[in-house]
Amino acid sequence: MKKIIQSLALLALSGSIAISAQATTPEEDLAAFQNFFKNRFPGVPMEEYTNGVYSIDPIGRENWEAIEEFPPYEPFIDEGQSMWETPFANGKTYKDCFPDGPSIKGKFPYWDKQQGMVITLPLAINQCREANGEKPLKYKKGPINNILSYIAYESRGQATNVVVPEDDPKALEAYEAGKKFYYTRRGQLNFSCANCHLQNAGMKIRSDILSPALGHTTHFPVYRSKWGTVGTLHRRFTGCNKQVRAKPFKAHGEQYRNLEYFLTYMSNGLPLNGPGARK
Amino acid sequence: MISNLMKAKNREFFRMQIKSMLKIVSLALLLGFGLATQAEQTAAPAADPKIAKAQQMIDDADKARKKAASVESEWRDTGKMIKMAKEALKKGDSVKAMQLAAKAHKQGVLGYQQAMAQKDQGTPSYLKY
Image (tube, rainbow over all chains, first blue to last red; front, side):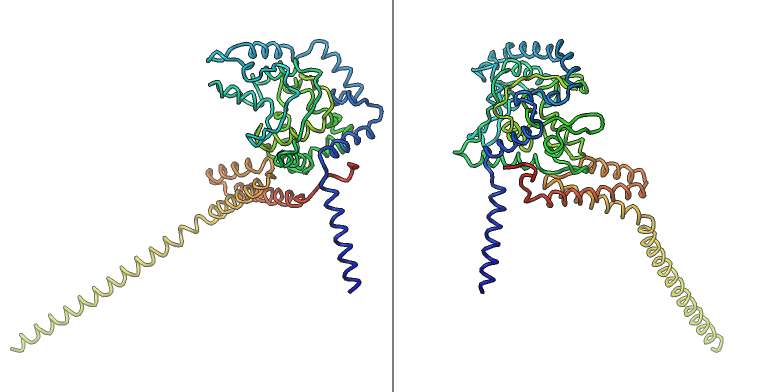
């Protein structure tokens, strides 16, 4: 009888340890995430992570700095400014939707209690357009990148500050869903986002160095030499999923919105520096 | 009188002969029809077994793909393989269709298993809390 009670107590104890190990708060996740990089690359200052792989790749950095002398994303910023200032057919502008604009990137993504979902900046732009009788823009390529580039440029220097409100448990659910997505292995190659950009950050994959996850969201939209144009964060998510041979999800669908919510939260405190240039 | 009797007997014999001939002919016709129908019935599946099998394999692969997708774990090329299998079957290449369907089915099954294996997974051990 004693033995049975002892084993039951042990089982209950081990169970509670396993549960407590899993149930971490967003704040604890953030500390663990950022400490991981502090320990992995002790010489790299926290703000440097906003420069992506160039924070840990000195040779790549030289090329990148040369590119940044004549930034390839500049024409997109100009186009975006023109979009911002051009009234819709009903005479209203983006400013009517975003009174604090155009420097608004630091407010996104956020949890919208009324809509019960994570609102990303591109989604808010399209909601604004639709409310004003305009067609929504495509989420990965094309003109959405112009207005995002302009907003990102105007928002430079703002701190990443994603909040998971405590008054709505659905917000935490969305955060947890994004976190689960990030750590879940997927596709034929059986890789998770974390396998490459957390566990193996700084290692080589073929001739490329894997960029650290920290700061991944600060510089989007991004001009990628591979794309030959500026693209959105969700276009990059799509590309990553395809690379591990997983079927990508819909841009600004629930999965990627939650992923952006978690991933941006992990960069809390880092300054925004978009649009960026990457190879 | 005798000749009349003979004539009647002949007529009766002749009638009997026609009757039996008719019986034989109708039996032969029935037999022939039956055999032809049976031949038709056996001929249809004899021409189709590979096509039917390939179609079944494609359907199974699509079911497996949908099951993986239901747990957000569909692989990149599964749908493409199924599409290619369907195209191959349309062109009559049932062997290629079966090969592609088998691959796609395996991917669907593995995709689902991959998600199930990580159902209760938390944060990785290399993250220190």
